Image (cartoon, rainbow, N blue to C red; front, side, top):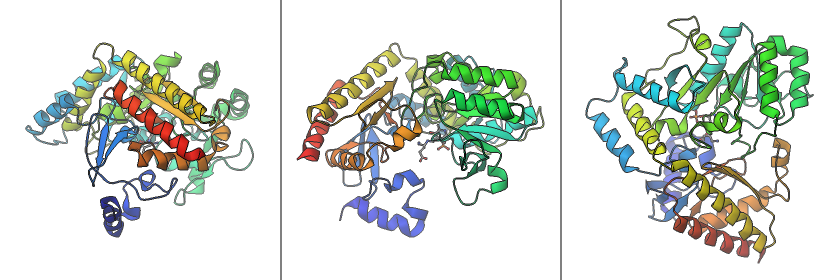
Length: 427
Ligand code: KE4
C-alpha cells in the first residue's frame, strides 16, 4: 500500500470524501488521489517521496513556482508582526494600489478570501446597483460554489436556470440564465427578450473550467455592446485568467473592459485571497458607503497580502511573461507533436502560462465540443503520465498551468514522458 492510499483511507474517516475540494478526489479519472508532503519550483513530492512535475500549480496560484524564496521570505516577515487584526492595515492599501496597476479597469476594489466570495459578492453588488434580480452565466463556466452560480440551463434555450446541485433553491436558481459560450446570436436573442431585466452577465472571458477555450473574434465585443445597450453590468471572472494569461489578464489580451472584475488564485500567491472591483460608481454601492452588504473576518489578511505582494513582484520581473508564454507555447507544440508521432489527434491552445489540451481532431470552441472529446483516452493518458511523474489536472474539463520555474529541461522531461505514454497507449 502506498502512503497516499494509507493517508486517503485515514482522511476519509474524518473529512467528507477524504478531500477538502471535490476535484482532488480523482473521481473523474479513477484511482487514489496523491497526497503530497512538500513542493519546490515546478515539483511536487508525494508522501512516498516520489517527484512529480506539476502542471496544476494549486489550480493556478503557483505561477512563480512552489516555495518561491521571495514569497516565503515575505510571509516569514509578516507573521512576526501577528497573523490577523480584523482591522485595517497599510499593507491592504499597498496591495490594492498594486493590483490596480495590473487592471486599469479597477478604480476601486474589495479583498475577500476566495474566488467564490469574489464572484458571489460581485453579482450581489450588480443586483443591488441595478435593482434587477436576473443574472446571466455560461454553460461550462465555473465561478465558485455560491448558490446563484451553481445553476445550469433548464430544458429549452431561454428558460430559467435549474440548480446544478441539491441544496440550491429552485426559486433562486430561476433567476440565473445560462447561455452557450461563443454563441453571440443566443446572447442577442436573450437580451432582446429580457435585457432590461438583467442585473449582470458574468463570464470567464477565456474559459478554464470547460478546459481552455478562447472567445471567437467579435464575441466579447458583442457582449460588451449588449450590456451597454441594456444597462447590464459586465463582470469578467478572472479568478483563473487574472495575472495568468497576461499581466492584465483576459481583459488585457482581448481589449474588452468589464465593469467589474473578480480575482483570486495568483493574487494570494498560495494564501487565501480573492478580490472584486471595477467602476467606482458601482463599488460605492458596497457597505459601509452603500447599502449592499459584504464582509469577511480575514478579508485583506496582512500575511496573505504579503504573499500576494511578493508574488506580484515576481510577475513584474523583466521578461516574466515573455518567457512564460514561450515556455507554455513550446510545451503545447511539443505535446501535439508527440501525440501525432503516435497517430493520436491532440488539439492545444495557450496564452501566457495557461494551456488547454484536448483529445480531438479539430479545434474546440464550445462546451458541447469539449464534452464530445474522448474522456476514456484522457483518463488513460492522465494515469500514464502520473505513473511517469507528471501531475496533470485530474479532469479533462480543467485547464493546465506552467510556472516560471518550468525550465526547458523540465519541459523536455515532460515531453519524453508524453512520448512514452502515447507509445504505451497505442501498444
Ligand atoms: P475558489 O473559491 O476555489 O478560490 O474560486 C472559485 C473559482 C471562481 N472562478 C473561476 C474561474 C475558478 O476557476 C474558480 C475555481 N477554480 C477551481 C478549478 N477549476 C478550483 C479548484 C477546486 O475547486 O478545488
